[in-house]
Length: 478
Image (tube, rainbow, N blue to C red; front, top):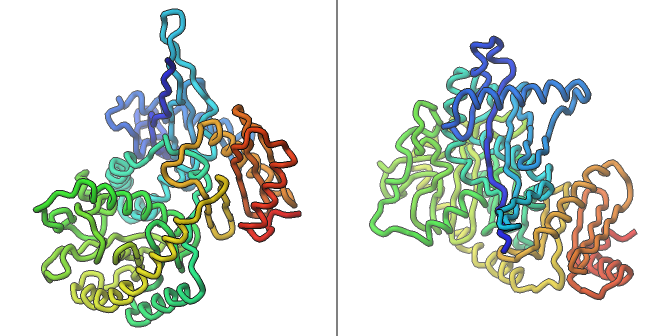
């Protein structure tokens, strides 16, 4: 019986070709390398080969050099995260193990992983690092290249286990944001609450509001919101769910907070140096997720991470506050003295807790209605202009690997034709006689999976038109 083995992360490293210009100092090009126990000679070999590929491909494409290398058993992805700084990821291709003539044979599937998806994973890894540490150039400018290596090592050691290649699919490539649809009155109530809070607490520069894993309101720039949304979904909410399942009684919350400052000083490899990737144990449903460990104790340690957002990557302090499933993200001016004052959090809690307590049940009603609606087809809709992602494919739905590969290929084809005008459409018959239809109009993409075995091309096209009219206000109709 055949056995499927999914893709695995082989190595992830960063290099700066400007360093280590002499043969005896080539190792200085390495800024970070995973796995860290790889022999230095092998690290130098991998970095040297990557540098050679980048230099060679620049000859033919100066503005867009090497992005991917395909091999039978693996593939590599190259991402230029900053001028002259590259991040490279190597992934082992998935394969099927089966017995043939009394021997074990591996059949590698080199096309299972889309380049756009892997590229997005590398880009997200760097974006998450930059969100909490700033750019590599700024770290070197303010400290040293050795400190950059230390900070990268501390962050990557904690973040890399969050990379799940088994879930690398079209949703990864799109990197969209799920919104909670609410009526006008509720939306205005949330917006009024945010404005009211910011007016009463001038240190707060901007805010965003979420319910569960859905965004309700945000004043954050789109690129920043993308990575912040991923942080909330993949780190904060995931750890809350895991912690609620294995909560350990009798443990104090403040035991799990870093006792240090709100900056990563890079002096230690201890996992507590990145507490923004490791939340306090125990299910949290009310109060500060980042802030004082115990609001009732003035001596309680305060941890508020520094994030770098905006066009100028200016440092700001991120306060996350939650009541039930409603969550507020507040961004305070960098260096604001209130961040370290216990009284500030007491006053903020008194101010926002009643309002969140009132809004949360209303949003729960909207969320329940959204969950209770059964969609006839499995579809994915994405708007590049506002990052809105809408899908009927929920967690737990099993989508065949063939289908996900076809969806990835369609998205890649649309991406290549992004300068074309009008509506582009692709219709593919699957091996089990189903259909997958993809449409793109302006900056919107729409994919539908049809499981009807006997449907013909005309019937499928008519169903797509009907679905577009019903859900998306004719935006895909010629």
